[in-house]
Image (cartoon, rainbow, N blue to C red):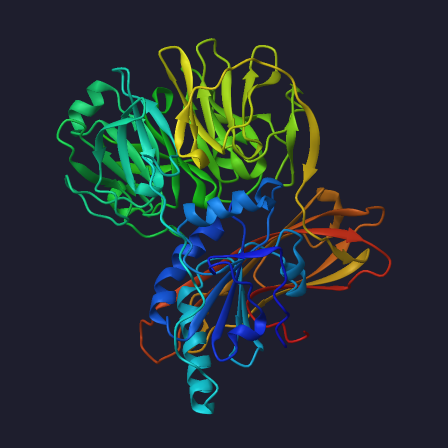
Length: 600
C-alpha cells in the first residue's frame, strides 16, 4: 500500500517546520500513533528509544498524536506532554484524527513502517514489538541499501530549548510530618523535600537511570508512601517510591539519603508470575503507592497492567492485590475487578480510595466478610467523561490522577484533564468542584489544614482557594470514528504474521488466544468468549445501532534459527472497537496485531 500523506494541525520538535511524506523519501519512516493519556503508548515511547539510537542514520520516527480525551486535543497540553515524556522525534498534531483514519488505525498505540519509497510494509498494534520491529527494519534496510534507494544521514528532529524551573512536571506530594512535603520531581528524575518553593534536600542526582546509593538515579518517579515508624525502623528505609518508568519500587532512608531497590526486576511485566520475592517479580509502571493498614502493606497502583499490587516491606514480598489485567470498570471481589490505569491512591482507616484514570472514575476498596471488595463512586466506563457535579451517579470526571482524604472524611479528586479539584462526600453521595483553572493537577496533600495541589503542568505546588460550587458541564465520549458493521454474521480476523526469523510457538499447544466481549453484552448474539484461533465468526444481534467490541488477542512466537531454546516473545493487544450497526456495514472486521492484512 502507498502511505498516505501526513495531515494535521501542526508539528512539534521540528524547529517550526511543517513536514510532508515526501520529506522522508530515502529513509525508513516509523509512524507511532499515540495519545498521551495511554500507558501502553508511554511504554512504546520507551521501547523505541534504543531502536531510534540503533538505526539513527536511516530511521525517522514520527509520533502521530491522535487524542482520546478532549483535553488531549489542546495544542498546549500536547506540547507539555511531548516535553514531559522526553519525546525526541517529530510529532504530528492530529486532533481531528485525519491521519489516524487515513491509515485505518483502530487502537492506541499502533506502529506503521513505511519503506524509503513510500510504501507501508508493516503494521503492529500494541506494545512489546521491539524485537519484531528490529527484524523488520533490518530486512527493509538491507533491501533498499542493495537497491540504492536508502539515504543515510540526520533526520528532521530539532530539540526544543531546555527550560529551567525548580520542579519539572511533579507528580505527587506527601507530608513529611514536620511542616514540609516530599515531592516526586518527576521530569527531573528525583524526589525532593520541599519547604514552600525551596528544595531542602534532593534524593537522586537528577538523571534518568537506575542506580542505588546516595548518588541514585530514577526514571520518572511518581507516587510516594511514608512508612509507619515501626515498619521503617525494621526495614531500614522511610519512603517507598514508585519508580514508574524503571518498573521498580525504591526505598529511601531520609536520614542518610541512601536509595535501595526494594521490588521489581527492572523489566516490565507482560506475563507470568505476579506473587513472590519482591526482587524477582516484574512490575508494570507503578504509578502510586500507599500504606494501608487493613491490607498490611503498601498497595501499588500498577497502571501498566490495570491491577493493584501489594508489597510487604518486612517479608520482602509482592503480589497481586486486586484486578485481572483486563482494562475496564467492573466491581465486586477484588480478584475479579477490572481497573483502567489506576494512577492515584489514598488510604482511610476503612477504605482505600483510588483514581482510575482511563475510566475517569473514583473507586474504593474495603474489607468484606469474604475478602476485599471493589466499588465505584463516580464513573461509567472507558468511553464516558466530562465535568459535571451533583449526585455521584450523574457526575463526570476527565482522566483523574490523584485522590486525597480530607479531614472531614470527604475525598478531594485531582481531576487532571478538567484542570480542577473536585470533592466527593461519601455521606451524601454528592460531587462538587473546589477549584478550577489548575494546570493538570495530578495529586494533592493536606499541610497545616490547607490542601496543597500538585499543578504538574505548571511545575509547582499551589494552594488554590477552595470554595465549593457546582458545575453542570457537558458529557463527552471518546472521539473515535466507529467501524460500520452489519447485523448478523461478522467475521473477526486478528492479523498476526511472525516477524522475519520467527515462527509461532506450538510446542506445548496452541500459540494464540482470542477473547471477545461486547458493550452492551447483548450486542453479540453469538461468538463471545475465549478461544485459540485468531479468527472468529460473530453474530451481531438485531435491534442495536451502536456498541463496542472488546477484543484481546495474543500470540507466542520464537526464533526460527534451529536452536533448541530460541528466544520467544509474547505479543498481546487489547482493542475497544466502537461499532455502528448499519445495513451497508462490513461483514469482515480485520484488526492488525502484527504484519499486513492480506485483504487490504
